[in-house]
Structure formats: structure tokens, C-alpha cells
Image (cartoon, rainbow, N blue to C red):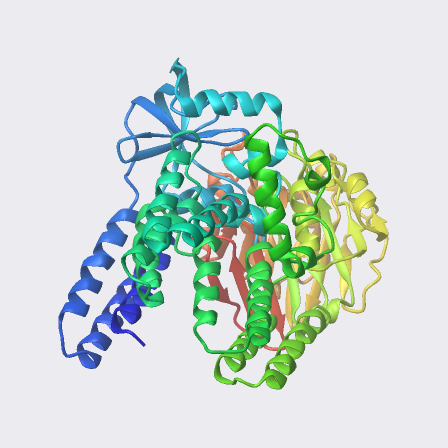
Length: 628
């Protein structure tokens, strides 16, 4: 393999780590790569190039710090917000009526925060990858732009054409393979380039297509796919060597697109180019492309879209014509109904077992030229995908991040049962529609064995009726003396108790699996804690979910000392008006040296066990284990 290509591949890995802000891994990877280059290559120019390129990428992805007050110019528009810049400082402005190049006076800022749940979209992480960490807290529009881009955007926004809004401005309700790859534009530009090449040759087609894309950029925003298209045409204009084209893409694209190292716009064409150079038959190439598209759909979208897979070539051509016709003011009602990413779709979850099996299949694909083996490994991978859904031997407990509220999902091994404790709602967000149901689908939970509504507060049971409309529920438990129909120990503690208010009526759930004891307190207060200690021996609790979101009315020092859990969990929203969790509760946890995880800081908490293996992870990236 070309030495420069090896260096560029390492540079792409550096850009990926830098975009993910994984600076510790980045440092070790750079040291390892430099050591490899010094031993593998006699010339030092490769190491020097890699070092300079790595430093440039790292500096390019470093956050600019807190932005200053002043004028900010809009450079990207979305449905409910826009992105604006002042020098290196990039901010989010929540202004749905903004247009390109509008100017805003921003006087104060706040950190971008959002809910973090495994397998679900996080706006905060999405923005951080674009080097945007701050949002305008106070802003005022200074001037509206009269530029070509702004006028065209306002006109198309008034038409409310979903296809054009998605294709031109990436304003879509759902991210799909077609929208991520910028299929309409790139296919149209590629067709124009091939048309010119047949008549004038490469010497004309490459620069002409670059000029056409740059002319397009005068009227519409530059889709990342257009940036990659220009890089490809430029490199092929200079040399037909495919390795040079990949080197240019891997080095230039991450510098031009912040956080773009793992964009599908870059990954898919590079993989297809590499497959085309393997010397396989046309049939083997088609199978290889199909395998990679399946893997990328699962990893990036957690689903398999059969239409995109098997009709990709046909649909991309049709969408290119639809795109061109729309720009010319024509209408194609039939083409507008084409299913792009919303028909014959199967939800998946890229679990560890499936990832491993698919990697084995891909490795086998790359080392064997025989079609029979390729087909066999491909079939095995798909079988593993669908079988792994029901072959998970781990016991799972998920404390979802739904803000100021409670929702916990408990899944027995091999999906024998799925129990949910609370389904809290929010006045400003539909937790059921936006978080709970999507997460259940991502984990292939088609029904709930039981739903325990601990008490009648909106932030605990407000979503019960809505959830029942989306998914079958075996039993809805609202009383403390109702048993949970599962095969492992699951109890409601102190069904007969003295309660002075609604919070003290909360169902307190105690369950055990793989030698791990869990205690979920609902909103029960200190009086209930005293009654529990009088009736039960709770000294063996391993995981305690604190009552009432860490409020000072719960989690007394004596209760925490008696239960002495290895891990304490608090489900709480950021900047909540109740000031939860209480400082005294946090001081008690610190004094007793009880490790604590909070959704407002750590996002979703996932605990999973298999016999003596007891681990946890959070959506923010923390991992750990519980002692046996």
C-alpha cells in the first residue's frame, strides 16, 4: 500500500479522535503512529507530515472558549435555530425566522445542554462535534440579509417544500442515508461531469464541474457532499491515481468540515473506491457494497432500510432529476412520493455481539476472493443480528435521562420480561414520544411485562396512558400490594405504612438479580425510610435510587449509612426550579464515600450483570463495576 496512504489513514484516525475530544487516546495514538513510521519508513518526511497534520487537526478541533459579546453572522439555518459566528467563536441562536447572513447582537451566553440517552440523539454532543458549545441567552436581530442565499432561502421556506428544504438546507424531520449523503446534488453534479467528459475529455470535465459546484455555492449553502465532490474532482484532475484521491479526501475534508471525520459523506465513497480497487468481480463488488451499507445503516441510524439498500442506484438517479426539476420550478408528484428511508425499515440496535460478528464477516470478505465464502459469512452476520436480539444473557437496568422526572427500564436476560418503573412526563417536552418509546424500540422491547407507577405525580406517572397507546403493557401497577409478575425476586416494600402526603404513598421497589440488590425509592420521604429500616434489613443494598430526586425531604444520613450502597443514583433535571439534589444529601453521600451518578451530569445510567460480572456505564462515557 502507498506510504502516503498509510500516513493519511492514520491522519484520518487522528481527526476522528480529535473531533470526539478524546485527547488522551489521541496522544497515545500519535506516539504509537510516530514510532511505527520511524521503524517502518527510512525517510522522516512521513513522520513530519503526520506530526504537522495531527497538530493542525487538533488545533482545528479545539474549542474556542467562551464567546464574547458582539455581532454574530448566521452561516447555517435549521428549523428551530441557527448557527452564527464571530471570528472563531460559533454559537447557537434559537431564532426560527433567521436567514443566511442575518446579523444578531448577542449579549449573554449559556452552555448548550441536552438530555443524554444511550442510542438516542443528543443535541449537545451533536453541536460539540461541530465545535459549538454555547448558545445565545440574550440576542437581538440587528439586520436582515439581502444576499442571494438569504432571499432564496426565504422564498423556499415560504413554499414549505420538504424535499427542497431537506436537499438544499438539510432541514429534515428524520436523518436518512439519502439526506446524509447529499444524494440529489452529488448525483446531479456527477451526471453533468460525465456528460462533459464524454464530449470534451477529463481536461475539461474536472475543472468545469468544480466551477459549476462553486457557482451553485453562490446561491445555496455548501453541503458537505459538495465539498467532497470538489476534492475528488480536483485530485482526479491532477492525477488519475485513486490513492491520491483518497489521500486528498482524508486530509482536506476533516480540515474543511469540523467533526467530519466520520461523516457518511466521506466514509461511503472511500469504502466504495477501495472496494473497486480490490480486483473482484462485479457481483462480488455489489455484495461488498451491500454489506457495508447494511453495517453503516445499523451503526449510524440503528435501522435497516431495504429500499435504500436494494434500489439505491435507481433512486439516486430519480432524486437527481427531481432535484433538478424542482430548481427549475417543475413538479413531479409521482417522484415526490418515492420512499427514501421510510418504507420497509427494520429497527436494529448495534449491540456488541452483532458488531463483533459483522467485523468477522467483513474481515472474511476482505481476505477471501471466493463468492461462496462471502455469501456464507454475510448470511451468518445477518442471522447473528436477528438472533442476538433474543440471546442477550445480561440483566439490564436503565435509568433514563428524562430531565426532572423518573423512568427506569428493567430487562431480564433473553428478554424474558421487561418492567418499567415510572414514565414521567414534562410540561415542555413529550418524554414518551421523544425518549421512552424510541429507546424501547432501540432495545427491541415490543411489550412491557409491567409498568409500576409509584405515585400520582406528573413527573412519575404522567406518561402512563400515552405509553399504553404505543406499546402493550401486561399490568399497570398503581397499588403497593400488587405483585409484579416476574421470575426473580421483586417486592414492594412496606405495603402497609403510615403516609402523611402523596410522596410517602410511593411504591418502594426492591429487586434482586445476579446477587445484586436494587432499591428504588420513588418520592418516599424520611418517615418512610424510618419505617423501612424498622421492618427490613437493607444493609445488603448494592444500588440505591434516592428518593424524591435527591431532595432534602428524603435520603437522611441514617438511612444512607444503614443501606450503605455501592452506588447511589439520582434522576434529576439540570437547572431545575426545586434545586434538586439538596446540598445536604450530596454532603452525606460524600461523607459516607458512596459513589453517585446523576442524570443531569452523567445522562442515562445503564447497569448490567451476568453472574459475578456487574458493570455500569453512562451516556456521558463513564464506566465502572460493582464489587462482588
